[in-house]
Image: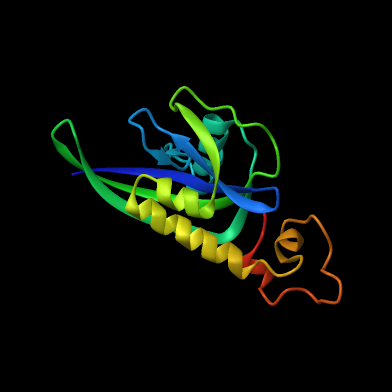
Length: 169
């Protein structure tokens, strides 16, 4: 059996105060997150960073503490292939999406729409995990604090999350 490793990112951004997720449209018509093969000698997070840049033109901030793996099987030239994809969570604070030749389009979708439109059940599960992860961190200033955009929220000490579980990569 052949084995392949890929990496990608669940990319989000706030649009009019609502968290939206980036979906790319593949030629076969399904919507999915930016991802691609891990090159020899490359770490999964470096591969995810490279793939997001190649497929969207976006520079993103990875949020430490979120990493999910999915595994699936498919046939390639008559051979069974086991594919493992590692997903990370990343914020796109700005920039315009420039879709690569591999895709037919893109959209920023609120959570419920993204959940409905993502093409595969295992990817939907990763999206649900990402949304839950971000909701746990939505206290006043928590996400901004860990992304270095503001100091500690007024009237609060540092969040109760350990610094080792959150960092910008």
